[in-house]
Image (tube, rainbow over all chains, first blue to last red; front, side, top):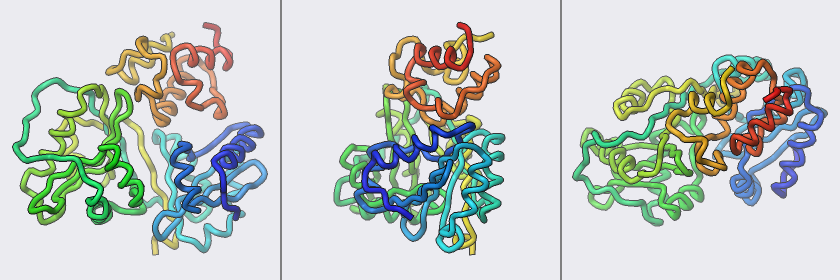
Length: 272
Length: 76
């Protein structure tokens, strides 16, 4: 296993795989800034093979696995040579429509992965008017809130199934004013973590602490979010397909499945 | 056969693609949308866009998408 020290090394490895590709396959869509963060924290390891490159990113107590392969056949053969998949705790995911995901699932299952969860993407066009406005005060999270925000997210979401942020990512999001919170008695009762780029905005996490539920805090956060994102034309989010309660709530706000799924797989070290 | 602009309008009816020169920066297409778009373009034009060409630079605006189609054998 090699440790990547520069962003360029990662892109070079991908490019070398692409150069020999007859039917390039990947689940790795790296953004340079994110890669830089992983490299600075020594979180990104890799295995380079003939016609395929594999990446392992440390995430809490397990690794996330990514691949670039010149073809489905290369993926099938080279993934079986990775001994780390037999010993380490590893999760991975495949994004696409049902057909594309099913095709790439087979080699991963042959390497010891099993389906762990499925997320579905939901989208909502911008709407004018019609939304109620809550009286609950919604504010941006402050720097000191970061550990509590992380705790609430980790309690509300599955670390294997959904890509939870690290503390430094939450601190950056707070600094970029991407996290709304409702506070009760000085404590964070609920949060909405979003990322807006141009005309698109994605809700990354929406959660209310257990003891503050049924107080319409979640509604206040969502209404405030829509109200403040005036320029956005399209709202998206990913939700666990088994979380019917959350899906119903999102439908209430106008979101609907758009056909894209994210199939999360985990190896036996995680499942047992 | 539908035009690229018509296909984009079907995939993302909420956006005016003719008014943007950078779909990625404007948040109109993300990496996941590119996967959907490629499948639709393949079907519509009877081609198979190479995996190595599925990169943001090729989906930046109408001109770059049309250039990609030409590279993939479509006569526009």
